[in-house]
Image 1: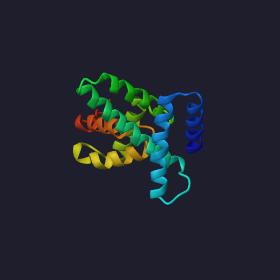
Image 2: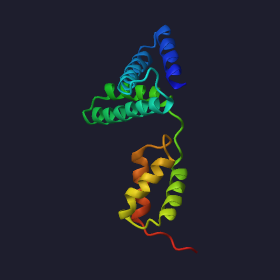
Image 3: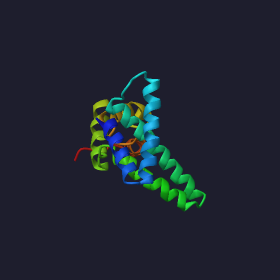
Image 4: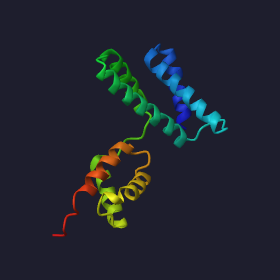
Length: 154
C-alpha cells in the first residue's frame, strides 16, 4: 500500500537525517491526512494517495516556473528536488507515442474530426490514460491531432 510506503520512507529519511526528503514527505503526509479526514476514512486507497501526490507535483511545477521567472534559482532548485522525490511515488508515465496511439483510437471510435470534438476525445483519452499521463500533455496532443485534417488512407 502506497500510504504505508510513504510512512516508512519518511521514518527512514528522519533516521538518515535527510531533511529535504523528510520535510517533503511530512508535508505529503499532512495533505494525505487532510484528504482522509475530508473523506471520513482512516486510511486512503492508492488512487486517493496518487491524486494527492499528483496535486503536489503540479504545485511544485507551478512554483518552479514562478521562481524561475523571479530569478530565484535557489528556490527553484529546492522545489525541483522535492518534485523528484514526489515523482518517485508515481507510476511511470506513458510515452508520448503511446498517448498519441490512444488518441488516434479514441478519435476514430468517436468519429472526431475537428476541435469541436475535443471535449469528448479528452474525456475518453483521460479515462484510458488515468494516472499514467498528465492532463496538460493529453490536452496538447489531442489539440494537435484535432487541428490537423486526418490523413487519407493510402
